[in-house]
Length: 292
Image (cartoon, rainbow, N blue to C red; front, side, top):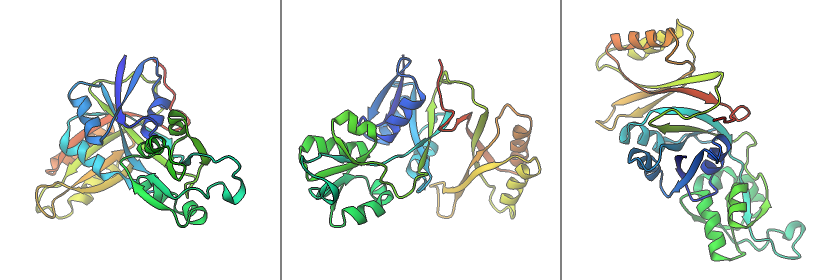
């Protein structure tokens, strides 16, 4: 049985999304406390794969995770998929509470800053005077609410977290936006056994040559005249010196095609350094079904 590392504890969106894509009879999902530990588990051979949240509809790229992928490890991207980040208010229901009083006993929310920000409208309307305690993940917040056994505490998290820790969903789907999706990538050392996908992507890193006016234009032109679509292009610091950046590019094409390798060769010919992070199948939420 293949092992997959994810950001824990049990009940995170990473856990829920991995359970959705990978059948539990073929894969064992193993939680780790920090994202660096998730990566290192696969580097060290403790797991075959790592699940990495890389981008969110509301908050954009998860830059610390991008930096870990680029600077700290050498693991190829093997697949990507999207999964809805549905946030719920989770805690203890009090007997007899109803209507406007159903949340009246809550004094503190235990969660991560991103989740709190994504639920700002709901919290401002229904819990305007609540305090906040920050933790490392939404599921960790729910776990602590259970551990403290204190009805005045509540967490923000997945329905899986509520189920895992035996707590009540006090209010469901409380995020400000209904289209809140997270894009996950799978990194590892060997391709997973997944259902074929009609979509493919390739992710590359491009470092431009110094003192070459118009180099970025040349890079984009190599894709444009071949009608290769770039779904994302983002600059990130190389961490070598001030003002030195590379470009992180997601391409809607496979390295198995004829045009993409030719485009990369053209880019390298003008002096760009190109690193291929992976060429992999892409699954949407509706089509991300697994078969071994």
